[in-house]
Amino acid sequence: MQLVDQDNIEKRILYYISKMYSRNLKKAQDYSKLNKCIGILFIDFELKKLKEIPKYITKWNLREEDYRKIVLTDVIEIYIIEMIKVEEYAKNSKIDTWVKYIMGSEEINMEIVDEDIKQAQKVLEDISKDEHEQYLADLREKYIMDMNNIESTGIRKGIEQGMVQGEIKSKKEIAKNLKLQGVDIEIIINATGLTKEEIEKL
Image 1 (cartoon, rainbow, N blue to C red):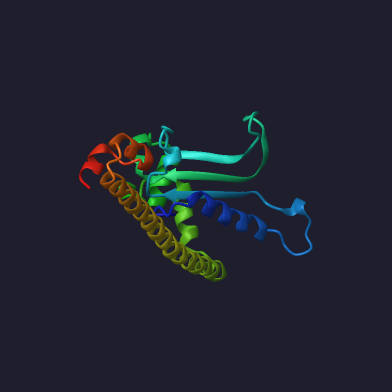
Image 2: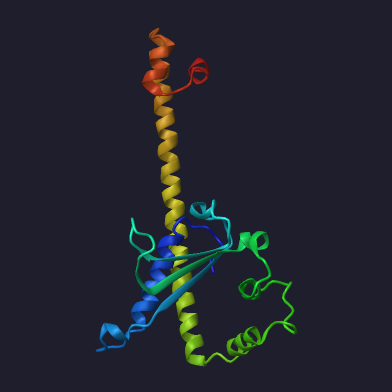
């Protein structure tokens, strides 16, 4: 589940499902022993690439570019669930009930849901200590990587912003010098990309 958009969610989900896929092959086993892995990503923000898709669950796998019906393999599947779209597109189907349950929706009454969800709740409560410890270890690793990414993203955006501001300042200095030399304003516009209004204010 990802609550904050850090501009790299596609790479992150591929990283985690690839790690899960490779982990299920034990030492000295051949590739036929690899099990199918399904990644389910809940996001609480709008993913621009999915903006025009009129549903809240999208399924992704490896397909041929021109022959979209041909799937290379089904051993890896990714489902992206956009939580901000659930209320708009949910139709009260079984999958909708599951999604709302996982989201912790207050609309779900655990006393009246079907037996599958009740069983899932019991399994969740009875999760083994080893699995729980591994889960916590994964969460710790994810937290560290998230913090590093937030820091690097902030630095990168700061540098980009500084470069843009520096470029604007440089253009204004050039425009100012050309204006002082009596160069025609249309030439200054073409040379700097500034607007007529911006040049007149210099």
